[in-house]
Length: 176
Image (cartoon, rainbow, N blue to C red; front, side, top):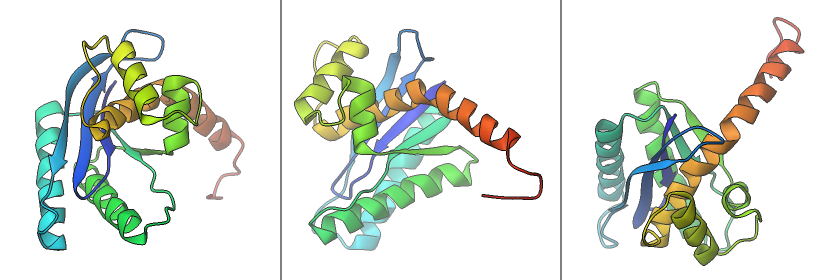
């Protein structure tokens, strides 16, 4: 499975591609950050995020897009920018028929480090170790994008089994 992880943000949108399957060694295929100028108009920044994500989709042809689920923060403008960048990334994938998976920050941290309360340094260290890198990806947004991809690769099999079990026990004609 090839997963493009996206750590959404308007100023820095982390992107990272990981390939592998649960229980096997994982391979990093690429990592980076889509940057937008802070002083640019919102529309221009969103277009820049779109162009950056589209370029990564073109270059890496992922099977799935794993995006950090936006959570409430005290800074409303930060959460809005994060949500807008997240929506742009999801739209890019949807146009291509690429499935999108959302993972909370605590799910990602728990999957990669063993604790949902890990800090950025711990996440970076584990990403470095799991992908056999010589140094942690910089900035932290890039490491977080790789962590999202790793999380999805490891969690997808269990999530798929759960969805199949729910589908088996859901009466026909009834939707959730």
